[in-house]
Image (cartoon, rainbow, N blue to C red; front, side, top):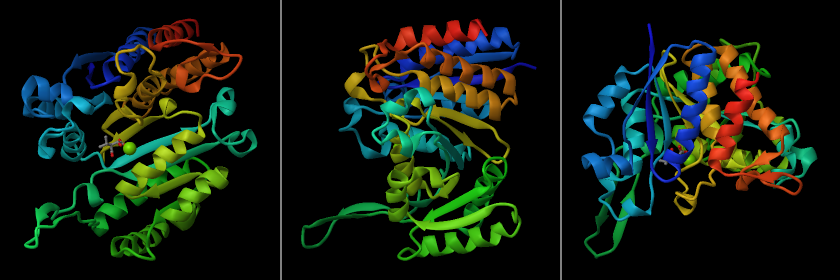
Length: 360
Ligand code: IPM
Ligand code: MG
């Protein structure tokens, strides 16, 4: 039976990087007889322009029917002034939530070839391999009530709510422990339990879940300290598990340790490992349309898709090796360029990965 992949290029640099990822996916499909079939639709600003909403019902239905989804990026200044209820980002949040994609895996791996592209000293980041497990369908992103209003005295005020239920914490903690178990067997749970009630429950539930994983070493860290430790001594971490907002922030921070956010893929999985795969970076409107964006995070997201949703480890390994070989050749997009390497654009980078994959 063929596997249906829904491709949502999105906005900004989304269509440019997606074109390269699709080339790689098509070649992998031929070379490893994956039996995937691609279909395309719009999400975010592109969907607002086409359907009037950032996620059309028909698109959501197609996403539910698909075996996996590959997403570019959403958002941009064109839609900044729009009604907040239909901002491009709301389409992304809705698809995550409607598909139940609560487990967000964000690996931060330093390719040895890029050690000098990191803003930190080589010895601090060399060999870095962290996995951030971010809760993706709960917490302050989705909590109600949330409101913006004008008080009687005329002052504007707004608030959000940060709720977590025991079951939401337990299932994401399990993802963290399961991942740690097949990696370095260390899990750091990041919270703000010295201040927040939701974090106090988070910590208590993670400690309960730990009883099922005696082989994994559990530690806890407050999020402010974690942010500091990530730049002080990042290699102390193996797997980090944290809530939606802390994970959003820490994963951007971790990405820069690897040289560029343009290198980092992600997987968002439901309880049955059905997933949506996307680069961690955004739509980068400042460089959209210039053909200079780094397509590697999206290409590596294809690799994660083959690994996690389709169990095609050989094809996934091959794509990762092809990316590494292209870096060995010295090819770099602007975001990872350093002295002595060759600067290339989006298409040339994608073509080079295709050639490297073909010749494996
Ligand atoms: C991310 C992004 C999104 C998020 C935005 C675009 C809504 O920053 O995937 O990290 O905050 O989750
Ligand atoms: Mg983010």
